[in-house]
Image: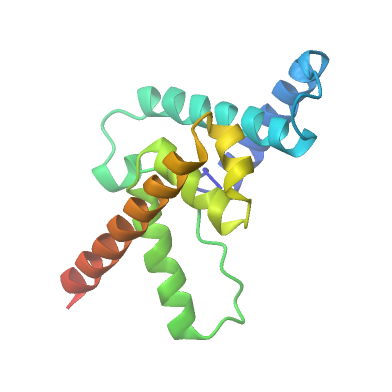
Length: 148
């Protein structure tokens, strides 16, 4: 979800698998395995992004924005495809924590589990999610206004 293209996604996936393998002996079972794996995956992805940003000096501002790449299936109607694309562009403009929050929300992960993954309270997650939804709407509206 954090890669810009399929090659980067493959590399990041490989790094996540390696980090999960290395960290598994420290898994204590205090949380669900999926929660632990999300946390390892997200931390690895964010570290990957930060490392890549240091190596990507000189690129245009748009190329520096990391986020999910557009893998919308070809059979999705064109209008829906544009809405998904606009959402992807807006998500790319969020900071790491907000982007992670949105992606977990879109994967229908419960607030309680998101709370454990991100190390924030459930109330904080709810407040942040409401703010992020408003910000995404503004970003999408701004994007649409700039396209006209």
